[in-house]
Image (cartoon, rainbow, N blue to C red):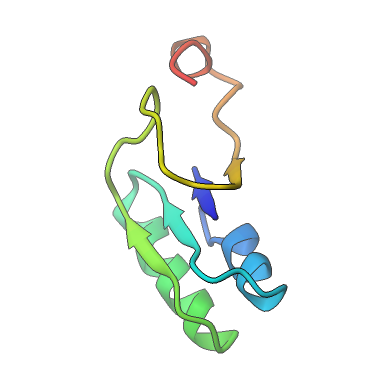
Length: 79
């Protein structure tokens, strides 16, 4: 599972709790990466954390969640 624009990684945490083998929380904001790591820890799950810019890439994931990245036209065209 890949959670792009993850913020606090609520989708990645939920995926792990639902039985996902691996979940990556991705956000270019380092504060969000710290929040995602803390959220995973507080919820008893291990998340992969990434601050790489993955928009416009072809990620190797079976499921992709994309957060609030469509409200700016320059981001929406990259998805």
